[in-house]
Amino acid sequence: MDFRVDMFVHQKWVESRLDLHDDIFEEGDDHVILPPEFFDNLWQPDPYFLNSKISEIATLTHKFSSVTLYKNSTVRYACMMHAIIACQMEFQLYPMDIQICPIYIESFSYHNQKIRLKWADNGVTINPELKLLQYNLGQPLQLEETDGYMPEKYGNFSRLAVYFRFERQIGHHLIQTFAPSALVVMLSWFSFWLGLDAIPGRVTLLVTCMLTLVTMFTGMRADIPPVAYVKALDLWMAGCMLFVFSALGEFVVVKVLDVQYQYQVNKVPKVLPMRISAMEKGQCVGTVANWEGGTVNVRPRKPTQTPTTPGQVSLQGNGGPQPPLPPTKQPTRRQSILSVAWTDTDTGIEKIMWREIDKMSRIVFPGLFLVFVVLYWPILIFKTS
Image (tube, rainbow, N blue to C red; front, side):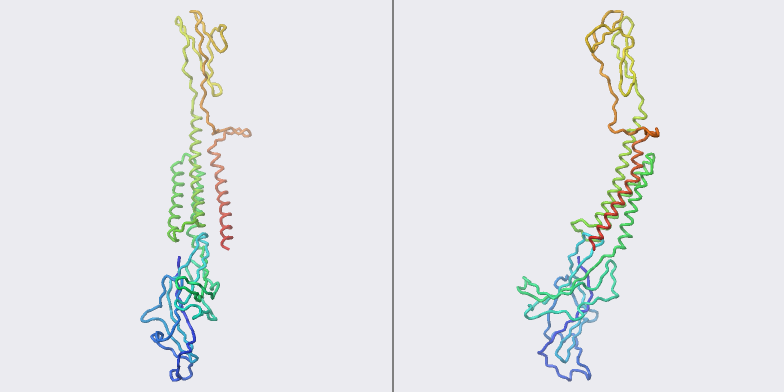
């Protein structure tokens, strides 16, 4: 939330109280350069950077500053300074954000009735050879001369402001973030071509893709302040992880459907135990259970029915009439709510649900990801502009 600036500061004002003699000027010169110590014996304005964290005059073997006196009583002070300037940055559009960072210059002791600060004709200039690693820096956007009320000093003070525009370069993030994460998402689609006989490979592929995205996302968060709001990069990484997680969820669904399909294919109808309803003189009358349409129907082998009340059947043997039996409850086979396989009426080929889902995912997942990319980048570019 700050930036460092190395700058040359030039101040110039007219000091009418100076009594200058011509013998201090060399022949043909209208000014004289004095040592920096002489500056302490002059009245001087006291401008400071209002939003600076650190500011100091550059030093090596001595301070880089100079004082120049002109014959018309003008004093010119120049120095080289280092400053760290605070900037309230906004990262909602990161990594395509544009930061507008001002520098405020104000007098510390003298209010606006004593000192009026003004920009020189050339104002602020930037070294054309200056290049930043992550930003494009143009000429200052705006120079202002305003008055600001300072409650700490109980007065209005003359203030100068210059605004810089930092445009973040997207090339680094395209190579390090967006392209690799998109390739990882595309890599997860290869699982749709792997059959369920390659379960270890399919699971390993999807889990590796998810862990790769999480690692990339964690590493990128170390480059920016831990802000509390959502950034554009967060939306991109969340979308990529959602696609990989959906591919993993699709695998779980097709595996469950395959288990149900194998259960129905391999299940052999079993004959229910015959219930002996009567036994007399070594003769037993049984029932034969047969499988018809998913239900078990019980039919008597060769019973002799006698008129009874509806819903009751009596069996006769050599021993005479027997008491009526209660109505038999027909057990039913448990059936799945979702049909896991069906036969195509046109081709007569059996269609299996999990295979059809895999075939559909090969088209649906790339299509949805393309829609996500088409919506993400135009909206981001529009908000940036």
